[in-house]
Image 1 (cartoon, rainbow, N blue to C red):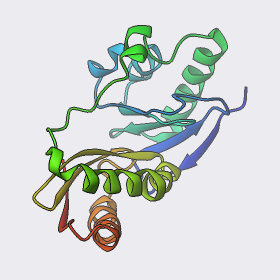
Image 2: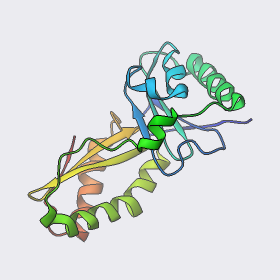
Image 3: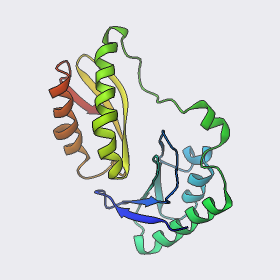
Image 4: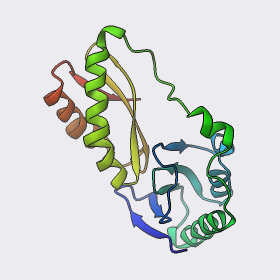
Length: 187
């Protein structure tokens, strides 16, 4: 098995491409070992000293480090991912995979259903593919009085350019296509 790595715009995050599906059509973000308990692979990655975040995309794994050096961490992470895939172990526990892991956003108003549908379509078709190339994802959390609430995940969370991406890129795009959008805020 050959695992490729790619740098991301976030110097603290590296993207690992195992050449096999990771989560298929969904994503999962783990900010600590406690959250990672639902994933055998994420749990193993958090056992590596210096790993501070794990994100699973459709076909990639983004790992965020603390003060550790990539020269020391990268071989350990590669070995852990390779061992996991070679053993044929699941990425997520079966119960979690069946539940589908819903986002914990707030309730949207039914009167805004058409606007929310447009927002989600733009996010899914134009924003998420671009953000995934950088090793991250963006999660919709709600729409209220013209404000769209989004959460940056994976390499995009804590990235120095995430505010510019959110405000300059995503906000402008949504405001252009959905006039009801007045602002985008990070959750």
